[in-house]
Amino acid sequence: MSKDTQRVKITPLSVKIPQDQLILRMQRELQKAMEKPVAQRRWAMVIDTRKCVGCSSCTVACKAENKLPPGVVYRPVIEEEYGTFPHVARRFLPRPCMHCTNPPCTKVCPVAATYKRDDGIVVIDYDKCIGCRYCIAACPYGARTFDWGEYYTDGTPVREQYELEPSFEYGEKWPRQKNRSPINNTRKCHFCLHRLNAGILPMCVTTCIGRATYFGDSSDTQSLVSELIGSARVMRLKEELGTNPNVYYLV
Image 1 (cartoon, rainbow, N blue to C red):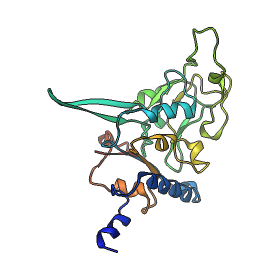
Image 2 (cartoon, rainbow, N blue to C red):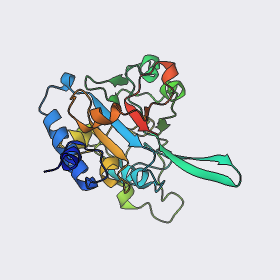
Image 3 (tube, rainbow, N blue to C red):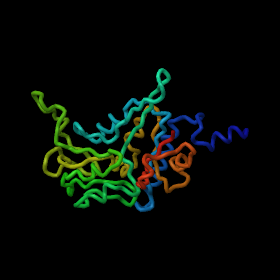
Image 4 (tube, helix red, strand yellow):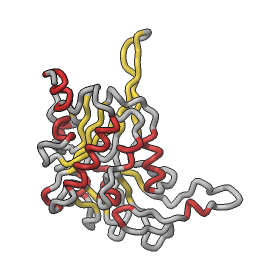
């Protein structure tokens, strides 16, 4: 076996490695991480902006997975035009919750409804949230939206049954009604915690057609996300604020 062939086998970011193998690797690493105590995991996401094509499949898949109502979006894709006419181009920036190590949102919640788990995921307790929306104002990334209790089929002859189906965020059943429901609460990305608990990658990772999104345990130095975070191309949004985000971008 030549040295070049050997290098391909130990370089997971090589273009010669099929992208589906990276998905399988992330899946194996996730299941390995789930065997550790919660406090020994550190979930992180890496998004390769050079691979993102702006298809918004991650946004749509997230909407479907979490049964999000109108006005609630966990993973928008921001579009930017750059350059000087006529030499212009567009780039895309998926923007989930950053799951900051030092999250400003948790400090302003008057009832401790939003807090940081030991594995680094910032979550919201819908039973405690009073809908004050202080956290929305405090988030420097605009990663939180409010559930006003709206339906896509409002104003039509019949409110469709599929809009009344419960969601299963945080591993619990949340009926679409005003008692014990996300209605009148702040909502945000939670890295598909209900899927992680089942040993499955977040929905946005599996549905990205450009394979631009990576996810895993950054406390595992051998994991794919750890290798990507060590790249010279890596950056994080608004690092100067001291939030220490756990979502990284390759630029």
